Image 1 (cartoon, rainbow, N blue to C red):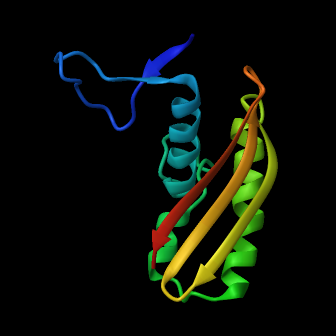
Image 2 (tube, rainbow, N blue to C red):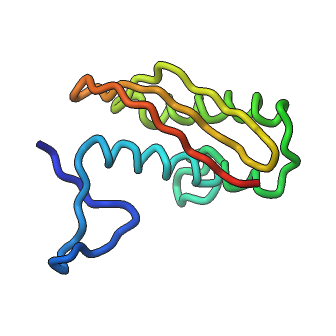
Length: 120
């Protein structure tokens, strides 16, 4: 079993660095990718899904469709060696943007479904 450092970094109840299982670590990596704005990382100007930028954007189905292509490209570029994307859908409803991702972890062949919700 592979143990990784938990994100966000914190200490556990034994005052040691908190750890996460492999599947949780993959989910945290996806979340970091989605919430990072392109241009935010040094030496990786194209890294990120840019969901945080959408807080100030008008919410519409067109925005969700454009974001779906951007997010899919980012996930495939940076995480394709770890996961295989089965389905990715971005929906906008009222003042909420939802990214639904179905994927398979390549190392364990475990299928996961995650939702990342961002209020706009």
